[in-house]
Amino acid sequence: MGFVWVALGGAIGSSARYGVNILAPRLFGEGFPWATFLVNVLGCFVMGVITAFLRTKMPEDETLRLFLTTGLMGGFTTFSAFSLDFFNLMQRGQMPLAILYALASGILSIIAVIIGFRLLAA
Image 1 (cartoon, rainbow, N blue to C red):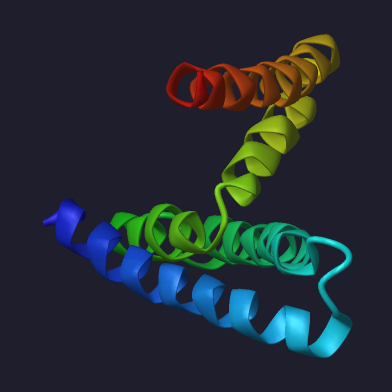
Image 2 (spheres, rainbow, N blue to C red):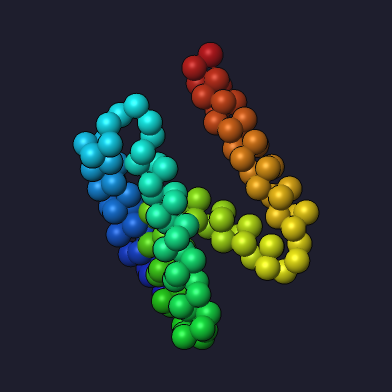
């Protein structure tokens, strides 16, 4: 049943992201990737709010967690999951590992895009 809640939340989150992709260039222009920037920052803020709410008010509600975090926010932006992972490492006092995770994720993800692109564009 968890897959159904994740899929439903993902459909809503992806649709919301698409809405931002349409709206942001109209509001802010096309010279900067505003849609991605806004989705990432807003998604991280909302992920923090959702996580705090679930941990303090509904810690046992796995269905709601799956729907809101993995589904809704995962569909809206995966950057929010990355940021939550970083925050969790930081909260556990694992700052060097958090920094390594952030640097490796950013650098390796960019390299992976370049390699993936070049594999088909070559």
